[in-house]
Length: 170
Image (spheres, rainbow, N blue to C red):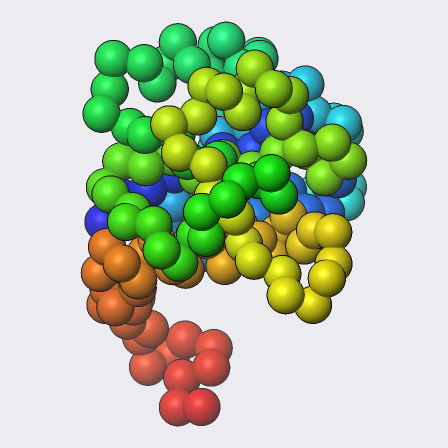
């Protein structure tokens, strides 16, 4: 079963964060769209180290730029849901829907105004502690968890390990 949502990364800067997100997405059977150019080569060692062997399991789609990403999205029922420190609505008050694409900006700069304006919805992860921003991999995990919880996907049956699998009985 594949997930009802996708994760999109706008021009990610840090290979380790992208690798961690790909690992999360592989484990949760969620597709990831990388909108290029990335700030690193997608074959980068740091990406592979963070993603470990899960990268091979990830459903990764690459897009040459935001226009190419939009071309593939438009005409579908997929809503583009941007997570931004400039948003006003908390992600926990938003009603996620099947088909939503959760978009996260560059670690160093977020997204440009044109991408911000193109989003169907803009959400904020409140930070009452006063920080400027969260690590993007943490933000992706928080947002994805809430979306899956709302859509009832967090309770999917896990893969059943055979009795001979590593970790069986622990």
